[in-house]
Image: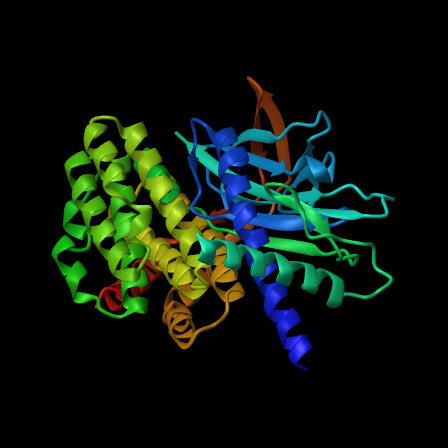
Length: 138
Length: 294
């Protein structure tokens, strides 16, 4: 029982450390991609492994230019990311390996961003930080 | 120095113990060593789907209101003098959201002197809430030096609120972050609806579209651990939810074109609110907002 409690405590500490590293990674590697745009208040980051998915569904308003940046630690390989409209139809994907997409809308619409970390056959799995940031400007 | 060495040793030993003792024996060997910042080896083998939640910021709402031709209205901002009235962390978080929306509104309408006053208020309330270090004196100095440049002030305000939300979440205070976001949305909608009786068609549409933003805000705040204070705040929003119930939605397909490397996303659903619905929204928002600033 003591050993289990110690394991839980230590794993919690390691998890907190991974989150802290992810925050630093995001600030150094992802925020610069939004240069020229004001970042949205929300901080969307997670530590993922091969085969994981992440998704953000959020409303975008008209009369605004948006940039959505997705950055992933290189250890995860080339992540793919798609935009789906409110009806679930895919309207864009980063087929050229883009790390961001710029867009504007004529009406407010909720868009869904779907991120997929490629699968791997490697014996040792690595986890890495994946962040999705939204920026806007006039 | 010895203390630091002991702490580091204990941390490393604990990490190795956890990695070697807490998992299944057949799992891939892991060392716990960090490959580099933001990555490490892991024992996890089950796949997961992470759902991020977010909502448009008060800055975005202020921007669309300004573009409809609406006029700045200082009399509807929450009094800067009231900031010292809030002594509990939930009231401070809620009113930090309210003042943050006022700050965004003043900044977008290029009322720079008012922006600087509200930035001071936000700094003081953030300090009371224990996250004051994200708005340091250097940030205020930068704001003062760039007071004539709206784009710089927008960037400074956005940076401050991004850091504040991140800090609250990393401190395990997601509920306070939720209150801040929800109150910020209510205040930005409050400012947008103050002259709803004289609103042009565009502003009325923009207000009706806030139904989507409301759903984002509710999804976000209800995804956080529900402290009694956050639960109470979500319940307070109910009159607004009811008022938006009768906003009409017409489905349409999206279409995408490109202009200079950027996508233009057209079509999609449209939202409309009748005079009566708009007036119900205006009234509900006014009464909820006035409760929040008590």
